[in-house]
Length: 294
DNA sequence: CGGTACGCCTGAAGGC
DNA sequence: TGCCTTCAGGCGTACC
Image 1 (cartoon, rainbow, N blue to C red):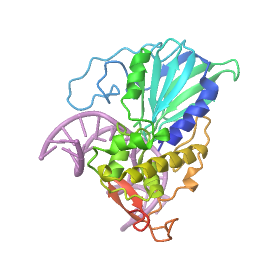
Image 2: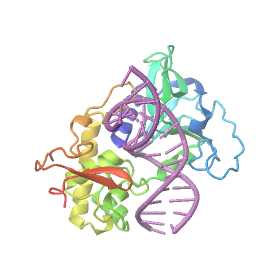
Image 3: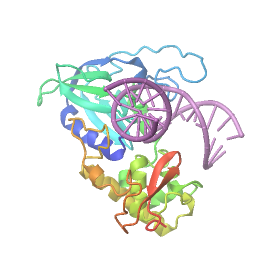
Image 4: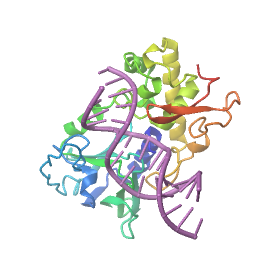
């Protein structure tokens, strides 16, 4: 489940091969993983909800950055943005099982590969970048200018990796809902998902069901520090691989071995040794320590 | 505003 | 061994 540390690791491993490379060919194998300009939000070309079928949009090779030289790879929260020199850009969200994989220029494609970019780069020779996503909760966004791409990132709150106590206070101040529900809201704070929400709450010594707006100033500051420390440690470990996650070079992460609470219901708390409690909060499996988190 | 439920989707894991 | 059910969850939408 890619959250901020996994997406950041993908960004870093991708940057090494992609920056300055030219995309000689782009192909979309599944139209419905892409959202084109003008598609309804969350549309992905899928005809969801009210049956009014939107007019099918024509996607050009240029929309997919064919012929572009990659000049930047940006990230905010869990969203990645591959920018071409012309200002065009491709947004990627990995969802639950999405992967961006660097692969040889020839050879068999993994199953569930939905898009392919062929790269020519002076340093590493010809390779392909694949977007693969078995469950298809992820997707690709097409941006025809830098402003549209920026606006996509700006839909999100401040990036959790560097969030300050002041930013967190601002985000949570009006949130009259459980702390964990607020932490999972990407418009408030960008990048925290189910795993790191539980990890950060435990590190901060705060129950995930506390009302977010009722945290004290010092609790909020401790939480901001806990979020940063948790995410930084996970980035250093190359992310968490609990099931599917690998970086752009196919390498799994190592943070799953360092997790304190996620997936450890009933196991001893690393702080006090008592069995960890579990339940459902904000429709998510949640694990915490009744003793250490107040 | 918030909360709850649901749909999307596949593969792993558990029950019998 | 094999079939069936359940679960995992990011995120948008509908409805209260």
